[in-house]
Length: 257
Image 1 (cartoon, rainbow, N blue to C red):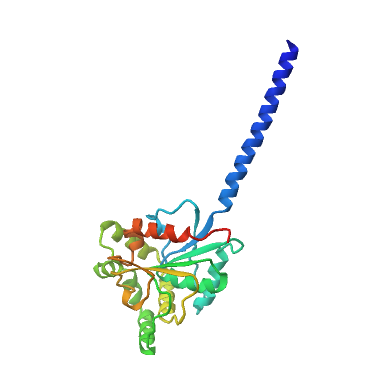
Image 2: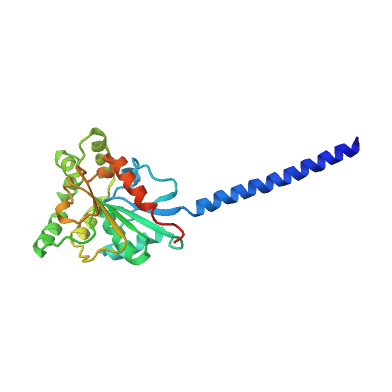
């Protein structure tokens, strides 16, 4: 009898050990799959945060992260600012960038420093829009006015129209974003954006733009794919359509490359 009990205990021990090895192997496999996820860093528009991306339904194979805006230094150049933001990126691993509006401008500048595998722009620009010195001076003058802050941060019929906020949900979101945006950052960013003089698109760039974008009219940009009726906030308003395009583009590049 004792012999049978001893044999049974030995069998249970062996099974337990084998089970532990099997679980460890499974955990290792999960870790390996997780390690192979493509890091994708999203950069929102002027002073906004990841709230504008909350409607997106992104592929689980993507490891989505969000770049946080930091306060610009006094008289800081766009290139220097982009270099500071790039410190939030793990450049030891393959990664991609997705930039919305002003975030797309910053993404292009980061690409010169950090070398992403792909840059995807949404409602943005891939090169600078030529402005005469007169208009650049006028923009700086208007932004220096004490009246500029309340005008820039006010949510009204004009701002709703230009941002394409045509539903109560979009209006509420835009109002919150404008309220939370730092005025000094907003003025700095608008000045840098108006004077952005990039002549050539960065390599591996993909640009999505809407036909109804009034802030950055489609006539002044050259997108790779056009969204009919898409406004400046189409990443939120037409999230299903944008998600489908993003998932196709972002997963087309192997994280092991």
